[in-house]
Amino acid sequence: MKSPTILARPEGRIPMLRCCLCCYLIVFSAMLARGAEPFHVFAPSPPTNEIIQWMVTSQDSNVSFQRQSSLELPFTPSSLAWQQDHQRLIVSSGAKGVPTSATIQATASGGMRLIAKSSLDHPTGYTSIDRSGKFFLAANYRNGIIAAYRIQDSGQVGELTSSVVTPNTEAHCILTTPDNQFAYVPCVKNNNALFQFRFDATTGGLIPLEPFNADPPAMFGPRHAAFHPSLPIVYFSNEQQLGVSVYQIQEDGQLTDIQHAITLPRRSPFVQGKRGLHASDLVLTRDGKRLFVAVRDFVSDQDSIFTFDVNVEGKLSLVARFHVGDIPWKLDLSPDQKLLFVSETGDRRLSAYRIARNGELTEAAQLDWNLAARDLVVAP
Image 1 (cartoon, one colour):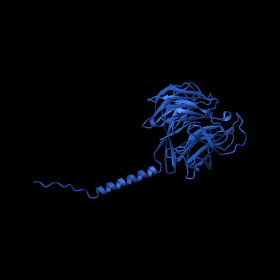
Image 2 (image 1 turned 45 degrees about the vertical axis):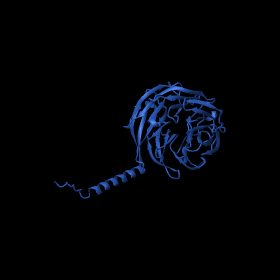
Image 3 (image 1 turned 90 degrees about the vertical axis):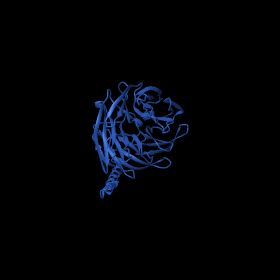
Image 4 (image 1 turned 135 degrees about the horizontal axis):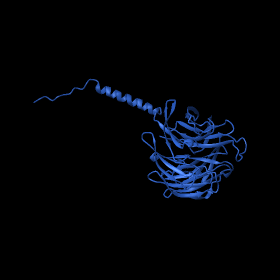
């Protein structure tokens, strides 16, 4: 009987393998800690009828932009809404021209593909997608029409499911609550109002509550909204008051104001048609602990981002102010919540600001994209 063959293990082979694996894990963990995972920024380019996509890389203190792709559309794009579950972008034509939407699929290779195009019943303005991802919502600034459309499984924007005309025009935003039961529409300037709806997540219906108007203080001009992730609280940037209002959401959807925080006092009373200081967008961190709001200065150089801390009750305290580029319009946060992106429309650029532990901002990078972009989407 032959003796069994015994294969000798090369001396040191397994320890060396383990060493290499440990080194790889250490390096990979360090890359993640530095925020090395790239993400994307999408923006409309009305002059070229395109959607443009940039890849953003953030490592250590370095932030870089790389233009990745562009997609030409058969209409002039205006507003963007991101359908997270399907990694889709729904683009609409805004208030001008024939009301149209297009659904764009973000591809695995980092590109974009047009998968659907639809005619809409009404012009759009601000747009969003409900929490179920099944309905496309739009608020029109000029005529006060609030509309909901069903999103088909293919991604195409389909039938109109609800349409309501608000008593006041200059409707600036529509978002559903985190539980998808209610929606709010703020109106700015002399149309100062805050309309309240019950949202039917099965039919896409928008049903006015009674009372319909939460009746904000005179000349506050609520503009955009952000919801607290765990408290029944909603925040509105106030275009004319230059601050943020905090409202508690009651069980029946009615709003009760609990705080009005100021960024800058107005230098003079608001006059219709006269440019001056106007607050624009706001954004809340995913953990609900910090809020940023932008104030635009159309006649001077007071353009700023204001940082608020959010306490356990959802109330705000002002902690920092940072001067930014001309006319900050749209805000968004990076997926890791460490960068604030600001579309500075007067300078036609996108700026990234690093967020310190204390909420203060420092310049991280600038992209001279030559766009006065009033909308953008940051997506992983």
